[in-house]
Image 1 (cartoon, one colour):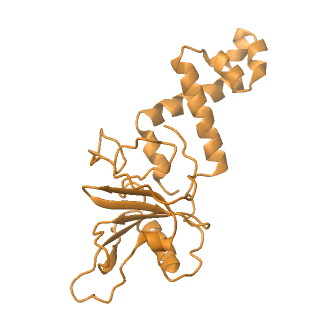
Image 2: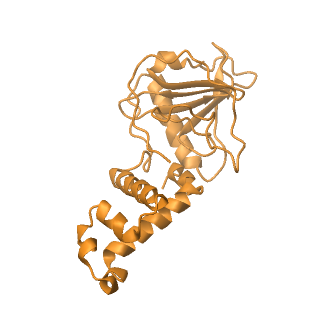
Amino acid sequence: MRRCRSASRTAPSQRTPPRRRSHGAGGYPFVTAPDDLSKPIVWRPELIPVTVILDAAPDGFETAAPVNPLAIGALLADLAGIDERHVVVADTAGEHRLWLRDPTPGRPLAAVIPLDKDFITRVASLLRFHRRLLGRAPGPLPRGWPLTAYRLARLDLMLRALDLRSTGATYRQIAVELGREEAARLPATEWKISAARSFVVRLVRDATAFANGDYRKLLRIR
């Protein structure tokens, strides 16, 4: 589990990634297994509701607009695979994540919005993207995406605590490493009931759960 920082807004990569696909439960929750986690990750659309799903428009809707991601903005990610094309488009107001189920150039497209518990978020994301297509300000990202500074800071502490624990550090040693220096001076009886120990225990517990699959919860809009 690593936190990704925004990539620079450069031209899209011309490299086509291997045609690998997530296998659902027990597999990776990405469109393709990422080789470089320093760039934006393209998550499976069913897991991240801010993804706009686009497919060929039904018969009779020939006037529906096609979508050329390159004409919208700089591409932070552009992946092609067995389930067609996934792109992340840069925007100063917040990125747009697209799944083009039919990437045929010039093909009239329609939006697909699953009737699931994330319906409202999917609609909000689609409206943002549609405003961008019209050349208007798209507006802010749905509330809860991306992660807040507070949640990112706590995730950083969780990762550090889990790394230390995996190398054999005690809870007291972890507390000191994370800035709770008073933990080193506490008698054993006081340490066992201290706020510092409780804090570290919670960090390690939550980090372990995340490492075992709970990290997917970060993709849910709260």
